[in-house]
Image 1 (cartoon, helix red, strand yellow):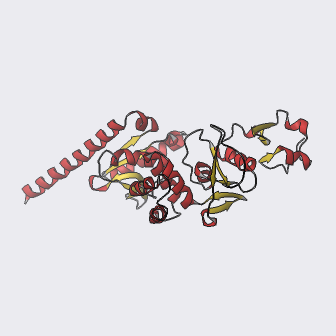
Image 2: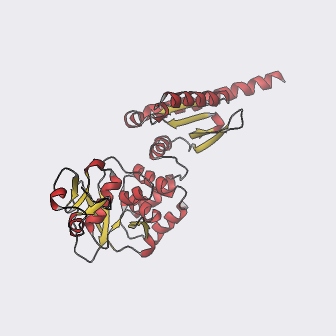
Image 3: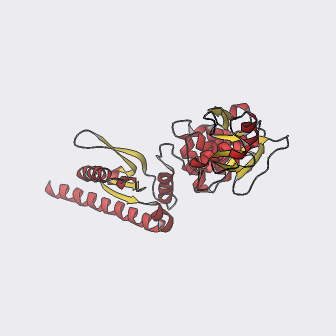
Length: 306
């Protein structure tokens, strides 16, 4: 049997020296080796980014700081693509672990103490520094996704712009300023950010993010994206709306209440965004044109009736 005090992720040598597990058990089916001398209980595998990040932190040793997508994950701002490698920073002047392709990305930085926070005994870059690091390295859209996720309820995006201004010599710093230009911390999720960027990068005006609609019962219905003047809503459909029959019925009632308030709602999946962004733009444009035609017709009727 294994010791119940065994940490979620642990170094094998430390656990065996402490008597928490025997070498024979460690080599058996109860444990999975994630990195050299770094283990996790087999029942929690396959490991997600959070677990792989904790493994990288334990493996990297003293002075390690989780950064990039790993920091975002522990900070509750998940925005990494599937199977993203764990990311850890180590003190630049010391020898230490090296990047393992597709598993761990090791960065050698001298981080300022103000850039670091601690979560459950694990040191990570804070939200502001993590957003700065991701925005300056990622492609444009994913940089905005990261900034939206990390800024949500945590910091004003103007601080990120200031950070870029104070560190002009760093590679990719201009991308940070560009990401701030397109970012909106009200975004509810990374897919919602990607959907918004499909529209605005195609030249459409910025939709309102998380727009409230008050129904006939004085209850608020939130739309992911909206053009209020056109009564047009755009939402990301992640599939959770239909997870159970009750959820499907609740979603249908919500849609009916929105329609009763005069709204037309377009919904798109991740597959739509990946395969047919042009169709999304065309349908939203069509919806906006239809709303303007309807408004013009109503105005003419009112004028003719006078």
